[in-house]
Length: 509
Image (cartoon, rainbow, N blue to C red; front, side, top):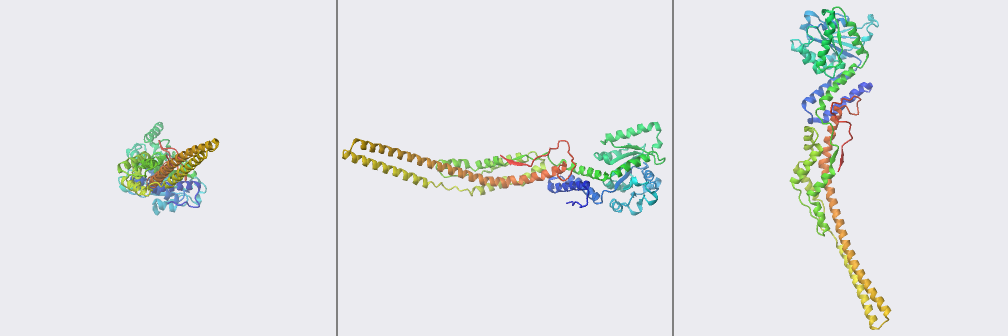
Protein backbone atom coordinates (compact mmCIF):
# COMPACT_ATOMS: atom_id res chain seq x y z
CA UNK A 1 0.00 0.00 0.00
CA UNK A 2 1.32 3.43 -0.99
CA UNK A 3 2.20 5.74 1.91
CA UNK A 4 1.55 9.47 1.75
CA UNK A 5 4.71 11.53 2.27
CA UNK A 6 4.15 14.00 5.13
CA UNK A 7 5.45 16.88 3.01
CA UNK A 8 3.40 16.04 -0.09
CA UNK A 9 1.43 18.91 -1.60
CA UNK A 10 -2.33 18.73 -2.18
CA UNK A 11 -2.04 17.65 -5.82
CA UNK A 12 0.51 14.98 -5.05
CA UNK A 13 -1.58 13.78 -2.09
CA UNK A 14 -4.67 13.53 -4.29
CA UNK A 15 -2.77 11.47 -6.86
CA UNK A 16 -1.28 9.20 -4.21
CA UNK A 17 -4.71 8.75 -2.65
CA UNK A 18 -5.97 7.59 -6.02
CA UNK A 19 -3.00 5.24 -6.38
CA UNK A 20 -3.92 3.78 -3.01
CA UNK A 21 -7.56 3.36 -4.07
CA UNK A 22 -6.51 1.50 -7.22
CA UNK A 23 -4.10 -0.68 -5.26
CA UNK A 24 -6.90 -1.53 -2.88
CA UNK A 25 -9.17 -2.29 -5.85
CA UNK A 26 -6.64 -4.80 -7.19
CA UNK A 27 -6.38 -6.45 -3.79
CA UNK A 28 -10.17 -6.54 -3.34
CA UNK A 29 -10.79 -7.77 -6.88
CA UNK A 30 -8.22 -10.54 -6.69
CA UNK A 31 -8.82 -13.42 -9.08
CA UNK A 32 -12.10 -11.88 -10.18
CA UNK A 33 -10.12 -9.42 -12.33
CA UNK A 34 -8.70 -10.60 -15.67
CA UNK A 35 -4.92 -10.89 -15.87
CA UNK A 36 -4.58 -8.37 -18.69
CA UNK A 37 -6.46 -5.71 -16.71
CA UNK A 38 -4.37 -6.34 -13.60
CA UNK A 39 -1.15 -6.16 -15.62
CA UNK A 40 -2.20 -2.88 -17.23
CA UNK A 41 -3.19 -1.32 -13.91
CA UNK A 42 -0.01 -2.43 -12.15
CA UNK A 43 2.12 -1.03 -14.97
CA UNK A 44 0.42 2.34 -14.72
CA UNK A 45 0.60 2.40 -10.94
CA UNK A 46 4.28 1.53 -10.95
CA UNK A 47 5.09 4.34 -13.36
CA UNK A 48 3.07 6.86 -11.34
CA UNK A 49 4.48 5.77 -8.00
CA UNK A 50 8.05 5.99 -9.19
CA UNK A 51 7.44 9.37 -10.81
CA UNK A 52 5.74 10.83 -7.76
CA UNK A 53 8.43 9.45 -5.48
CA UNK A 54 10.91 11.60 -7.39
CA UNK A 55 8.77 14.68 -6.96
CA UNK A 56 7.00 16.80 -9.52
CA UNK A 57 9.34 19.76 -9.56
CA UNK A 58 10.76 18.65 -12.93
CA UNK A 59 8.93 18.33 -16.19
CA UNK A 60 10.24 15.59 -18.49
CA UNK A 61 9.86 16.49 -22.17
CA UNK A 62 10.89 13.96 -24.82
CA UNK A 63 11.48 14.53 -28.50
CA UNK A 64 10.20 11.44 -30.31
CA UNK A 65 10.40 10.83 -34.01
CA UNK A 66 11.43 8.59 -36.85
CA UNK A 67 14.63 8.36 -38.81
CA UNK A 68 15.40 11.59 -40.63
CA UNK A 69 12.82 13.69 -38.79
CA UNK A 70 15.57 15.98 -37.49
CA UNK A 71 14.64 15.74 -33.80
CA UNK A 72 18.29 15.65 -32.67
CA UNK A 73 18.93 18.88 -34.53
CA UNK A 74 15.80 20.29 -32.94
CA UNK A 75 17.10 19.14 -29.53
CA UNK A 76 20.31 21.12 -30.13
CA UNK A 77 18.35 24.14 -31.33
CA UNK A 78 16.16 24.14 -28.21
CA UNK A 79 19.05 23.66 -25.81
CA UNK A 80 21.43 25.98 -27.62
CA UNK A 81 24.07 23.25 -27.34
CA UNK A 82 25.44 20.91 -29.96
CA UNK A 83 25.26 17.86 -27.75
CA UNK A 84 22.85 15.41 -29.36
CA UNK A 85 24.08 13.11 -32.11
CA UNK A 86 22.92 14.14 -35.56
CA UNK A 87 23.43 12.99 -39.09
CA UNK A 88 25.19 9.73 -39.84
CA UNK A 89 25.95 8.90 -36.20
CA UNK A 90 22.30 8.97 -35.18
CA UNK A 91 21.14 5.50 -36.29
CA UNK A 92 24.10 3.83 -34.61
CA UNK A 93 23.18 4.59 -31.01
CA UNK A 94 20.33 3.55 -28.76
CA UNK A 95 21.42 5.95 -26.04
CA UNK A 96 19.13 8.63 -24.68
CA UNK A 97 20.47 12.17 -24.56
CA UNK A 98 19.33 14.52 -21.79
CA UNK A 99 19.68 18.23 -21.21
CA UNK A 100 18.51 19.58 -17.86
CA UNK A 101 17.76 23.06 -16.60
CA UNK A 102 18.70 22.50 -12.96
CA UNK A 103 19.97 19.38 -11.26
CA UNK A 104 17.94 16.21 -11.81
CA UNK A 105 20.35 13.32 -11.26
CA UNK A 106 17.88 11.12 -9.36
CA UNK A 107 15.29 11.58 -12.08
CA UNK A 108 17.81 10.84 -14.84
CA UNK A 109 18.90 7.71 -12.99
CA UNK A 110 15.28 6.59 -12.91
CA UNK A 111 14.93 7.32 -16.62
CA UNK A 112 18.06 5.29 -17.34
CA UNK A 113 20.07 8.08 -18.95
CA UNK A 114 23.78 7.27 -18.95
CA UNK A 115 26.03 9.72 -17.11
CA UNK A 116 27.99 10.59 -20.28
CA UNK A 117 24.74 11.41 -22.11
CA UNK A 118 23.68 14.18 -19.69
CA UNK A 119 24.34 17.87 -19.85
CA UNK A 120 23.13 20.73 -17.70
CA UNK A 121 22.12 23.77 -19.70
CA UNK A 122 21.68 26.53 -17.14
CA UNK A 123 24.78 28.15 -15.69
CA UNK A 124 25.76 31.36 -13.95
CA UNK A 125 26.74 32.82 -17.34
CA UNK A 126 23.14 32.55 -18.54
CA UNK A 127 21.74 34.88 -15.90
CA UNK A 128 17.97 34.71 -16.13
CA UNK A 129 17.83 33.93 -19.85
CA UNK A 130 17.00 30.31 -19.13
CA UNK A 131 14.77 30.89 -16.11
CA UNK A 132 11.61 30.10 -18.04
CA UNK A 133 12.85 26.54 -18.61
CA UNK A 134 14.13 25.97 -15.09
CA UNK A 135 12.98 22.47 -14.05
CA UNK A 136 12.95 21.13 -17.63
CA UNK A 137 14.46 17.74 -18.47
CA UNK A 138 14.69 17.52 -22.26
CA UNK A 139 15.26 14.07 -23.76
CA UNK A 140 16.30 13.06 -27.26
CA UNK A 141 15.08 9.49 -27.80
CA UNK A 142 16.27 6.95 -30.38
CA UNK A 143 14.29 6.65 -33.61
CA UNK A 144 11.00 4.82 -33.02
CA UNK A 145 11.14 3.32 -36.53
CA UNK A 146 14.74 2.12 -36.27
CA UNK A 147 15.59 -1.26 -37.74
CA UNK A 148 17.35 -2.02 -34.47
CA UNK A 149 14.93 -3.66 -32.04
CA UNK A 150 16.77 -2.26 -29.01
CA UNK A 151 16.10 1.30 -30.19
CA UNK A 152 12.35 0.73 -30.25
CA UNK A 153 12.53 -0.96 -26.86
CA UNK A 154 14.14 2.15 -25.38
CA UNK A 155 11.36 4.32 -26.82
CA UNK A 156 8.62 2.00 -25.58
CA UNK A 157 10.16 1.91 -22.10
CA UNK A 158 10.44 5.67 -21.75
CA UNK A 159 7.15 6.86 -23.24
CA UNK A 160 5.08 6.06 -20.12
CA UNK A 161 7.66 7.89 -17.98
CA UNK A 162 7.54 11.18 -19.88
CA UNK A 163 5.41 14.18 -18.89
CA UNK A 164 5.21 15.87 -22.31
CA UNK A 165 5.69 14.04 -25.61
CA UNK A 166 6.86 16.14 -28.53
CA UNK A 167 6.33 14.11 -31.70
CA UNK A 168 8.70 15.36 -34.40
CA UNK A 169 7.65 14.59 -37.98
CA UNK A 170 8.99 15.69 -41.33
CA UNK A 171 7.13 16.71 -44.51
CA UNK A 172 7.90 13.41 -46.24
CA UNK A 173 6.94 10.89 -43.53
CA UNK A 174 4.38 12.62 -41.31
CA UNK A 175 1.72 10.13 -42.44
CA UNK A 176 3.92 7.10 -41.72
CA UNK A 177 1.72 4.19 -40.63
CA UNK A 178 4.28 3.00 -38.07
CA UNK A 179 3.87 6.27 -36.21
CA UNK A 180 0.08 6.45 -36.31
CA UNK A 181 -0.89 2.81 -35.75
CA UNK A 182 2.11 1.95 -33.61
CA UNK A 183 1.98 4.91 -31.24
CA UNK A 184 -0.40 7.83 -31.74
CA UNK A 185 -3.65 5.86 -31.80
CA UNK A 186 -2.75 4.32 -28.46
CA UNK A 187 -2.48 7.75 -26.82
CA UNK A 188 -6.14 8.77 -26.98
CA UNK A 189 -6.92 10.49 -23.71
CA UNK A 190 -3.39 11.88 -23.39
CA UNK A 191 -3.84 14.88 -25.69
CA UNK A 192 -2.94 17.34 -22.93
CA UNK A 193 0.45 15.64 -22.57
CA UNK A 194 1.59 15.85 -26.16
CA UNK A 195 2.17 18.10 -29.14
CA UNK A 196 3.35 17.57 -32.71
CA UNK A 197 6.10 19.48 -34.50
CA UNK A 198 6.34 19.50 -38.29
CA UNK A 199 10.10 19.95 -38.58
CA UNK A 200 12.09 20.91 -41.71
CA UNK A 201 9.28 23.25 -42.71
CA UNK A 202 11.90 25.30 -44.57
CA UNK A 203 11.85 22.59 -47.25
CA UNK A 204 8.17 23.25 -47.97
CA UNK A 205 7.02 26.17 -50.14
CA UNK A 206 5.51 28.91 -48.01
CA UNK A 207 2.14 28.76 -49.77
CA UNK A 208 1.90 24.99 -49.04
CA UNK A 209 2.83 25.08 -45.35
CA UNK A 210 -0.64 25.86 -44.01
CA UNK A 211 -2.19 23.05 -46.05
CA UNK A 212 0.46 20.64 -44.80
CA UNK A 213 -0.17 21.58 -41.15
CA UNK A 214 -3.91 21.11 -41.68
CA UNK A 215 -3.28 17.66 -43.09
CA UNK A 216 -1.21 16.71 -40.05
CA UNK A 217 -4.07 17.88 -37.80
CA UNK A 218 -6.55 15.86 -39.87
CA UNK A 219 -4.54 12.66 -39.44
CA UNK A 220 -4.39 13.25 -35.70
CA UNK A 221 -8.17 13.60 -35.56
CA UNK A 222 -8.53 10.37 -37.50
CA UNK A 223 -6.33 8.76 -34.86
CA UNK A 224 -8.84 9.93 -32.24
CA UNK A 225 -6.58 12.70 -30.94
CA UNK A 226 -8.51 15.93 -30.54
CA UNK A 227 -7.02 19.41 -30.08
CA UNK A 228 -3.39 18.31 -30.14
CA UNK A 229 -1.26 21.41 -30.86
CA UNK A 230 0.64 21.26 -34.16
CA UNK A 231 3.70 23.50 -34.60
CA UNK A 232 5.87 24.21 -37.61
CA UNK A 233 9.62 24.59 -37.09
CA UNK A 234 12.99 24.35 -38.78
CA UNK A 235 15.99 23.35 -36.73
CA UNK A 236 18.18 24.39 -39.65
CA UNK A 237 16.92 27.98 -39.94
CA UNK A 238 15.52 28.45 -36.43
CA UNK A 239 12.06 29.28 -37.76
CA UNK A 240 9.38 28.30 -35.26
CA UNK A 241 11.89 27.24 -32.60
CA UNK A 242 11.11 30.19 -30.27
CA UNK A 243 7.40 29.41 -30.50
CA UNK A 244 8.05 25.75 -29.69
CA UNK A 245 10.35 26.78 -26.85
CA UNK A 246 7.56 29.00 -25.50
CA UNK A 247 5.09 26.09 -25.56
CA UNK A 248 7.54 23.94 -23.61
CA UNK A 249 8.20 26.81 -21.19
CA UNK A 250 4.47 27.10 -20.47
CA UNK A 251 4.33 23.41 -19.66
CA UNK A 252 7.28 23.80 -17.29
CA UNK A 253 5.92 26.99 -15.70
CA UNK A 254 2.59 25.33 -14.98
CA UNK A 255 4.28 22.96 -12.53
CA UNK A 256 1.34 20.68 -13.23
CA UNK A 257 2.50 18.75 -16.24
CA UNK A 258 3.80 15.86 -14.15
CA UNK A 259 0.53 15.73 -12.27
CA UNK A 260 -1.48 15.76 -15.49
CA UNK A 261 0.68 12.99 -16.90
CA UNK A 262 0.22 10.96 -13.73
CA UNK A 263 -3.50 11.65 -13.86
CA UNK A 264 -3.65 10.37 -17.43
CA UNK A 265 -1.81 7.20 -16.40
CA UNK A 266 -4.26 6.68 -13.55
CA UNK A 267 -7.16 7.28 -15.92
CA UNK A 268 -5.75 4.51 -18.11
CA UNK A 269 -5.60 2.23 -15.08
CA UNK A 270 -9.18 3.11 -14.18
CA UNK A 271 -10.38 2.41 -17.72
CA UNK A 272 -8.75 -1.01 -17.57
CA UNK A 273 -10.86 -1.75 -14.47
CA UNK A 274 -14.16 -0.32 -15.74
CA UNK A 275 -14.76 -3.28 -18.05
CA UNK A 276 -14.33 -5.72 -15.15
CA UNK A 277 -17.24 -4.46 -13.04
CA UNK A 278 -20.94 -3.79 -13.40
CA UNK A 279 -22.62 -0.37 -13.09
CA UNK A 280 -23.88 -1.10 -9.59
CA UNK A 281 -24.46 -3.77 -6.94
CA UNK A 282 -27.94 -5.16 -6.17
CA UNK A 283 -29.66 -2.63 -3.96
CA UNK A 284 -31.51 -5.09 -1.71
CA UNK A 285 -30.92 -8.67 -0.67
CA UNK A 286 -34.06 -10.86 -0.40
CA UNK A 287 -33.30 -11.89 3.16
CA UNK A 288 -36.82 -12.03 4.66
CA UNK A 289 -38.38 -13.63 1.58
CA UNK A 290 -35.68 -16.31 1.61
CA UNK A 291 -36.30 -17.03 5.28
CA UNK A 292 -40.03 -17.48 4.62
CA UNK A 293 -39.35 -19.83 1.72
CA UNK A 294 -37.02 -22.01 3.78
CA UNK A 295 -39.49 -22.03 6.70
CA UNK A 296 -42.04 -23.52 4.32
CA UNK A 297 -39.46 -25.99 2.99
CA UNK A 298 -39.16 -27.62 6.46
CA UNK A 299 -42.95 -27.66 6.93
CA UNK A 300 -43.06 -25.20 9.82
CA UNK A 301 -46.41 -23.75 8.72
CA UNK A 302 -48.03 -27.19 8.74
CA UNK A 303 -46.40 -27.91 12.09
CA UNK A 304 -47.89 -24.75 13.57
CA UNK A 305 -51.35 -25.72 12.29
CA UNK A 306 -50.98 -29.11 13.99
CA UNK A 307 -50.23 -27.39 17.30
CA UNK A 308 -53.33 -25.20 16.92
CA UNK A 309 -55.37 -28.37 16.46
CA UNK A 310 -53.96 -29.69 19.72
CA UNK A 311 -51.42 -32.08 18.27
CA UNK A 312 -47.63 -32.15 18.50
CA UNK A 313 -45.52 -29.84 16.23
CA UNK A 314 -43.72 -31.55 13.39
CA UNK A 315 -40.93 -30.57 10.97
CA UNK A 316 -39.92 -32.35 7.80
CA UNK A 317 -36.44 -32.83 6.36
CA UNK A 318 -35.42 -30.13 3.87
CA UNK A 319 -35.58 -31.57 0.37
CA UNK A 320 -32.46 -30.65 -1.69
CA UNK A 321 -34.64 -29.98 -4.73
CA UNK A 322 -36.63 -27.32 -2.90
CA UNK A 323 -33.50 -25.86 -1.30
CA UNK A 324 -31.97 -25.62 -4.79
CA UNK A 325 -34.92 -23.52 -5.97
CA UNK A 326 -34.48 -21.13 -3.04
CA UNK A 327 -30.71 -20.88 -3.61
CA UNK A 328 -31.21 -20.23 -7.33
CA UNK A 329 -33.69 -17.44 -6.54
CA UNK A 330 -31.13 -15.91 -4.15
CA UNK A 331 -28.41 -15.97 -6.82
CA UNK A 332 -30.67 -14.36 -9.42
CA UNK A 333 -31.50 -11.45 -7.12
CA UNK A 334 -28.15 -11.10 -5.33
CA UNK A 335 -25.79 -11.56 -8.27
CA UNK A 336 -27.80 -11.71 -11.47
CA UNK A 337 -26.66 -8.34 -12.90
CA UNK A 338 -22.99 -8.60 -11.92
CA UNK A 339 -20.33 -9.55 -14.50
CA UNK A 340 -19.67 -13.28 -14.77
CA UNK A 341 -16.54 -13.42 -12.53
CA UNK A 342 -18.42 -11.64 -9.75
CA UNK A 343 -21.48 -13.87 -10.11
CA UNK A 344 -19.16 -16.84 -9.86
CA UNK A 345 -17.61 -15.27 -6.77
CA UNK A 346 -21.00 -15.04 -5.05
CA UNK A 347 -21.79 -18.59 -6.10
CA UNK A 348 -18.51 -19.81 -4.62
CA UNK A 349 -18.95 -17.78 -1.43
CA UNK A 350 -22.35 -19.19 -0.45
CA UNK A 351 -22.80 -22.89 0.42
CA UNK A 352 -23.74 -25.38 -2.26
CA UNK A 353 -27.21 -26.91 -2.30
CA UNK A 354 -25.93 -29.85 -0.29
CA UNK A 355 -24.17 -27.58 2.19
CA UNK A 356 -27.19 -25.32 2.62
CA UNK A 357 -29.45 -28.35 3.09
CA UNK A 358 -27.12 -29.73 5.76
CA UNK A 359 -27.04 -26.38 7.59
CA UNK A 360 -30.84 -26.25 7.52
CA UNK A 361 -31.06 -29.75 9.01
CA UNK A 362 -28.65 -28.88 11.83
CA UNK A 363 -30.51 -25.66 12.60
CA UNK A 364 -34.06 -27.06 12.73
CA UNK A 365 -32.88 -30.01 14.82
CA UNK A 366 -32.45 -27.51 17.66
CA UNK A 367 -36.12 -26.46 17.54
CA UNK A 368 -38.24 -27.83 20.43
CA UNK A 369 -40.90 -30.08 18.91
CA UNK A 370 -42.09 -31.66 22.18
CA UNK A 371 -45.91 -31.88 22.61
CA UNK A 372 -47.45 -28.77 24.13
CA UNK A 373 -47.88 -28.96 27.92
CA UNK A 374 -51.50 -27.95 28.42
CA UNK A 375 -52.06 -29.80 31.74
CA UNK A 376 -52.37 -26.55 33.69
CA UNK A 377 -55.21 -25.36 31.52
CA UNK A 378 -56.88 -28.76 31.76
CA UNK A 379 -56.61 -28.78 35.55
CA UNK A 380 -58.01 -25.29 35.76
CA UNK A 381 -60.89 -26.28 33.52
CA UNK A 382 -61.69 -29.41 35.60
CA UNK A 383 -61.52 -27.49 38.87
CA UNK A 384 -63.87 -24.79 37.64
CA UNK A 385 -66.39 -27.31 36.37
CA UNK A 386 -66.25 -29.31 39.67
CA UNK A 387 -66.90 -26.21 41.73
CA UNK A 388 -69.78 -25.27 39.47
CA UNK A 389 -71.34 -28.75 39.81
CA UNK A 390 -70.91 -28.62 43.60
CA UNK A 391 -72.67 -25.27 43.69
CA UNK A 392 -75.57 -26.63 41.69
CA UNK A 393 -75.89 -29.60 44.07
CA UNK A 394 -75.89 -27.32 47.11
CA UNK A 395 -78.57 -25.10 45.65
CA UNK A 396 -80.68 -28.08 44.68
CA UNK A 397 -80.41 -29.46 48.24
CA UNK A 398 -81.50 -26.12 49.68
CA UNK A 399 -84.52 -26.08 47.38
CA UNK A 400 -85.47 -29.57 48.42
CA UNK A 401 -85.31 -28.69 52.14
CA UNK A 402 -87.39 -25.61 51.64
CA UNK A 403 -90.11 -27.56 49.90
CA UNK A 404 -90.16 -30.19 52.64
CA UNK A 405 -90.78 -27.67 55.40
CA UNK A 406 -93.31 -25.90 53.20
CA UNK A 407 -91.31 -22.75 53.37
CA UNK A 408 -92.74 -19.59 51.96
CA UNK A 409 -93.05 -19.29 48.26
CA UNK A 410 -90.62 -16.37 48.10
CA UNK A 411 -87.56 -18.08 49.54
CA UNK A 412 -88.24 -21.18 47.45
CA UNK A 413 -88.35 -19.13 44.27
CA UNK A 414 -85.14 -17.37 45.24
CA UNK A 415 -83.39 -20.64 45.76
CA UNK A 416 -84.66 -21.88 42.41
CA UNK A 417 -83.33 -18.79 40.70
CA UNK A 418 -79.99 -19.30 42.41
CA UNK A 419 -79.87 -22.83 41.08
CA UNK A 420 -80.42 -21.55 37.53
CA UNK A 421 -77.66 -18.98 37.96
CA UNK A 422 -75.32 -21.65 39.24
CA UNK A 423 -76.01 -23.81 36.20
CA UNK A 424 -75.34 -20.88 33.85
CA UNK A 425 -72.10 -20.12 35.70
CA UNK A 426 -71.02 -23.72 35.36
CA UNK A 427 -71.65 -23.63 31.61
CA UNK A 428 -69.77 -20.33 31.23
CA UNK A 429 -66.87 -21.72 33.18
CA UNK A 430 -66.66 -24.72 30.87
CA UNK A 431 -66.68 -22.46 27.78
CA UNK A 432 -63.96 -20.25 29.27
CA UNK A 433 -61.79 -23.26 29.95
CA UNK A 434 -62.09 -24.41 26.36
CA UNK A 435 -61.15 -20.93 25.14
CA UNK A 436 -58.13 -20.90 27.42
CA UNK A 437 -57.03 -24.18 25.92
CA UNK A 438 -57.37 -22.82 22.38
CA UNK A 439 -55.41 -19.68 23.32
CA UNK A 440 -52.70 -21.84 24.81
CA UNK A 441 -52.53 -23.87 21.57
CA UNK A 442 -52.28 -20.71 19.45
CA UNK A 443 -49.56 -19.25 21.67
CA UNK A 444 -47.62 -22.50 21.47
CA UNK A 445 -48.00 -22.50 17.67
CA UNK A 446 -46.72 -18.92 17.44
CA UNK A 447 -43.78 -19.76 19.70
CA UNK A 448 -42.96 -22.78 17.58
CA UNK A 449 -43.13 -20.83 14.32
CA UNK A 450 -41.01 -17.99 15.76
CA UNK A 451 -38.40 -20.50 16.91
CA UNK A 452 -38.16 -22.00 13.41
CA UNK A 453 -37.95 -18.54 11.80
CA UNK A 454 -35.17 -17.59 14.22
CA UNK A 455 -32.94 -20.56 13.43
CA UNK A 456 -33.66 -20.39 9.69
CA UNK A 457 -32.92 -16.64 9.75
CA UNK A 458 -29.57 -17.44 11.35
CA UNK A 459 -28.78 -19.85 8.53
CA UNK A 460 -29.73 -17.27 5.86
CA UNK A 461 -27.67 -14.53 7.51
CA UNK A 462 -24.56 -16.63 8.02
CA UNK A 463 -24.68 -18.72 4.85
CA UNK A 464 -26.12 -16.25 2.33
CA UNK A 465 -26.25 -12.63 3.49
CA UNK A 466 -22.77 -12.25 5.00
CA UNK A 467 -20.72 -13.85 2.15
CA UNK A 468 -22.81 -12.10 -0.50
CA UNK A 469 -22.30 -8.74 1.17
CA UNK A 470 -18.55 -9.35 1.28
CA UNK A 471 -18.43 -9.96 -2.48
CA UNK A 472 -20.62 -6.90 -3.07
CA UNK A 473 -18.27 -4.79 -0.93
CA UNK A 474 -15.27 -5.92 -2.99
CA UNK A 475 -17.11 -5.18 -6.23
CA UNK A 476 -18.08 -1.74 -4.90
CA UNK A 477 -14.46 -0.93 -4.02
CA UNK A 478 -13.26 -1.87 -7.51
CA UNK A 479 -16.12 -0.03 -9.20
CA UNK A 480 -15.57 3.15 -7.25
CA UNK A 481 -11.86 3.12 -7.98
CA UNK A 482 -12.57 2.46 -11.66
CA UNK A 483 -15.11 5.27 -11.95
CA UNK A 484 -13.10 7.73 -9.87
CA UNK A 485 -15.67 7.88 -7.07
CA UNK A 486 -13.51 6.85 -4.12
CA UNK A 487 -13.36 9.34 -1.31
CA UNK A 488 -9.59 9.66 -1.41
CA UNK A 489 -9.21 11.73 -4.58
CA UNK A 490 -10.79 14.59 -6.47
CA UNK A 491 -10.67 13.47 -10.08
CA UNK A 492 -13.33 11.32 -11.69
CA UNK A 493 -13.19 9.13 -14.76
CA UNK A 494 -16.80 8.33 -15.55
CA UNK A 495 -17.11 6.15 -18.65
CA UNK A 496 -20.31 6.07 -20.71
CA UNK A 497 -22.97 3.98 -19.00
CA UNK A 498 -21.32 3.97 -15.59
CA UNK A 499 -23.73 3.91 -12.65
CA UNK A 500 -24.25 6.89 -10.41
CA UNK A 501 -23.25 7.19 -6.79
CA UNK A 502 -25.22 4.77 -4.69
CA UNK A 503 -26.06 4.04 -1.13
CA UNK A 504 -24.70 0.93 0.49
CA UNK A 505 -26.58 -2.26 -0.33
CA UNK A 506 -29.29 -3.06 2.18
CA UNK A 507 -31.18 -6.16 3.20
CA UNK A 508 -34.96 -5.98 3.02
CA UNK A 509 -37.94 -8.20 2.63
